[in-house]
Image 1 (cartoon, rainbow, N blue to C red):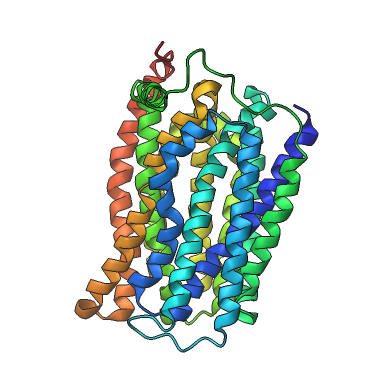
Image 2: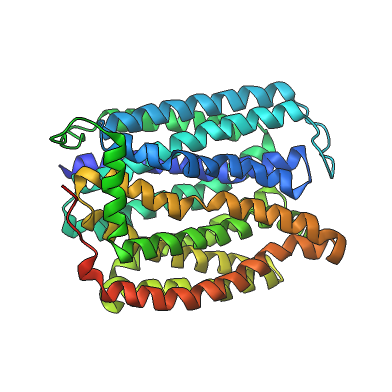
Amino acid sequence: MSNQSFNRFVAASGLTNLADGIAVVAWAWMASLLTRDPFLIALMPVALRLPWFIFAIPAGIITDRVDRRKLIMWMDVIRAVAFAIATIVIWQALPLADAPKTGLAQPTVFYVLMFTALLVGGAEVFRDNAAQTMLPSLVEHSALERANGRLWSVELIGNSLVGPAVGAFLIAAFAPAPFALNSIAYAVALVCVISLKGSFKPKPANTAPNWKGELREAYHFLKSSPLLRTLALLTGFWNLLFQMSAIALVLHVQENLNFGATAYGLLLVGGAFGGVCAGFVAERIVNRLGPKLTVQISLAVSAPIYLVMALAPNWITLTCAIGLSQFAGLTWNTVSVSYRQRTIPDAMLGRVNSLYRLLAWGMMPLGLILSGLIVRYGEPIIGRSNALNLPIFTASAAALVLGIIGWRALGRGFSRADQDQPAPRP
């Protein structure tokens, strides 16, 4: 494929991730305008992440059967429509009533937003799985690290750098505005994807479609790949802890640090510089340290980073901690995603990728729910101020255990990497 096609692919990814970045602030902050209950606030991002657990496997099977470009197009249509619905609902509900400490100020608005969040999250599962499996068709396998680094840099600029700032500014100015802009962004991304030329449908199997057999084939491949399993499980627990701390920050920065929506967005923007920097240097880090040591260090630094986040006395320290977390996360992804794209055969890449992401992303909703429950049941014991910070301390302690276990598991996995490329079962 030509570089022009890859550039259009990156542009579409940048636009959709700009919308995702706007949504990072918009969904959770909108929930906090309807209630101050940490558990109810956590339910909004749960609606976005729960589809990863529900639809990951069907998404993989479908991705390996259909034209991946067309699948991406339809998912962008669904997300554009969902955000349009959310825009109309919020606009009609204005002015919003004061958010109660428990319960909901406007239940209908909250539940409709939950429904649209489920639509957006479900479409994201199918789109992201198709997009990751398309990349090896756009660039040479030897260039995957560089292509992924560039792609993630663009994604981070939209998702974590520009998006949160724009989303925070818009929701502070006019609550429906970020949702309206997201609808437009997905529509424009759709045009970029339509313009891609080429064939993006996997080669058909010699046998008739059989989803049970196809799923068994993918399961057998993942089961026979110790390193892939290790990376998937560690990524899953890492994502659980990240989501636990991220949703806790929404109320922590509002009530403990006295930040408004705009300041919160700028905080995320500052932290995103770490991820953007990693996008440009991760390939060199991997080449210098090797993939094994790179992911071991990336995992090990999580515990102290969360501890700094919990103890941060000001926005500068908190921003630096978030930036280091983003740097470590993107460096980890450079190794794990490139390894996955290179070792899984294209004909089953969608299915194995979906099983992998079921483990890696399926635990995100659990982290969000745990965060809300920790605050809810911790508040009567240690007070609200300390309880709002407790999920971040918990994430730090759990990350320490994960880092110790993961260091050894990754060492064993990479030592057996030659066994991590089994042939598909006939």
